Length: 359
Image (tube, rainbow, N blue to C red; front, side):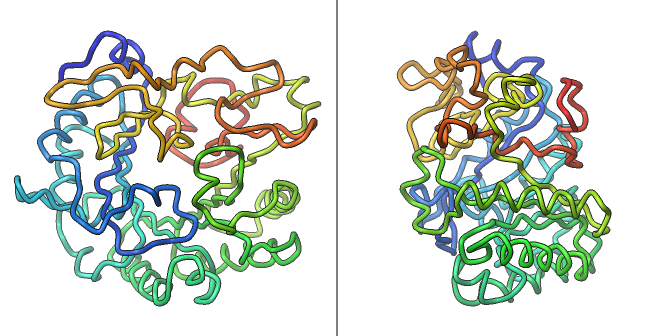
């Protein structure tokens, strides 16, 4: 791909990871899906040759980790080039990406995991939003729980490194006490079936476009703040054997004023990631998904810096009590943090970046 100068300068020597949204196709319609307005029933995917070119470029810029998402990435099929998801994984490995992973809803036939190319994955992350059928399926649809759990168990048996991403929603966490009980049960369940780590994503309304399509699945910021304190305390006391990643999400204004740099974790400012979308957009902040905001667009062998709705125009506009460009403040004393800010998390890019953050 031919990158224009602005886009090249932004990413070169800074980018560490690439998130590739391979296709808009998905067999589920989860209530809370951040990608919901872009979902399609037809096979709408990134052209395989274009994908290889972009992965080549970002590898040269410095990226070493790639995550494949969607839609549902395992449904990827480029008919013109006769390429499937396994071909994508193989290509990423051949290009020198040292950590290749996928986020999946786990609804595939389990023989998918027997594909030798799929076995090249360094990690497979399943989306499961509850430790029981009722809690999960109210979000993801009838039957989704059992299918996903069956495939998790099979993936573990086949030697895959398995992670679960679990949304924290109003059905699992209607209040703090019920929430902490359910999340503890979720961690224990994941541990019992052989999962190596679990990553929680609280569903919150934070003044972004996504608020308009997550229905009524969100929990209140105050609920999450209390759950976060309790859950991190239990995890730090080594109650569980598996790794648990928990986003902080909010901080008191007084703590920002005392140590703002500790919480100023912003991918847009760092340039450490790129989000490649099937429609030609290249983004940095996931909070812009479903909008026209992006950093650049790719088309016909070129990558051009976005002129109308460029994310980077916000850089430098934060006030002394802000650390995120896209989320809105909740009251005078509550400041939203980047959803990737997860203190002490065991995650490759987080651990490798020597940037002074409290890990």
